Amino acid sequence: LGAKVVAAIKKLVGDKPIQYIVNTSFRAEHSGGNVTVHEAGSDPSLIGSFFSAGAQSFSDAGMGATIIAHNNVLNRMSAPTGQVAPTPSAGWPSDTFLQGRRRKDYNDEAVEIFWAPNAVTDGDTFVHFRRSDVIVTGDLFTTTQYPVIDTKNGGSVQGLIDALNAILDKTVYKHEEEGGTLIIPGHGRICDEYEVGEYRDMIAIIRDRVQAMINQRATVEQVKNARLTADFDSRYGAVMGPWTTDMFVEAVYTSLKQGRPKAGASK
Image (tube, rainbow, N blue to C red):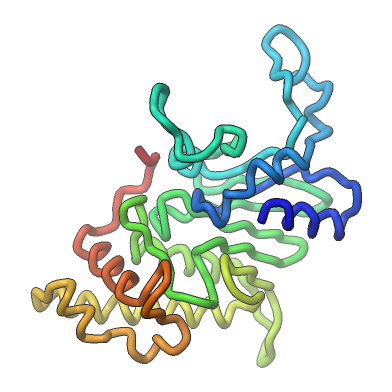
């Protein structure tokens, strides 16, 4: 897939270098092409700079695209010294941040990268291109399936709802017609804020239904058997594959039972 991404970019911009990659998640479908895309790019602003000259220089500074991500993404992709990392070091983010927002001006475009704590995972971000009025959501929003809430890696249903509300706070709609801020989902078609609002509402409704059964001391199997998602399954549901409806319901149940994790660095 990385080679296809590089080919598509070069078709659009020709020989201009790919300077930056933003990983909205550590998951393979969003970071698995890092090595290929990184090696196809360069950052001319670093070549011949302080970073590539002098006694404490980085000899490869600027010799590949800079990979930007929240620090928790780096933590998930790497490993402590002496342990085996799940991904090759050449694909690790080289420019990370810990706070809620990272800002950059590029090609006369104000670009903001926002951290969404404990949403789908603990390192999700979405990217707002302010001049173009485009938001890239990563897996915080998809049009094709229920959200893959990864409770083992810091995800939570309430954190995801909060993240979708944060996205909606930055969108602008066209009155009584489609349009306005363009939304690029992690999977699926380009759309506008209306679909994000529908998705947020769907998750909130299912959260409340699951919580009501938890309050009645229902087990996770009882919650699954209640088919609380039935009115949304035709659009988002799946009975087989890597992420099924039952897996989503169990993730919501687990998240609500555990409570939202404290935002911070992953371990």
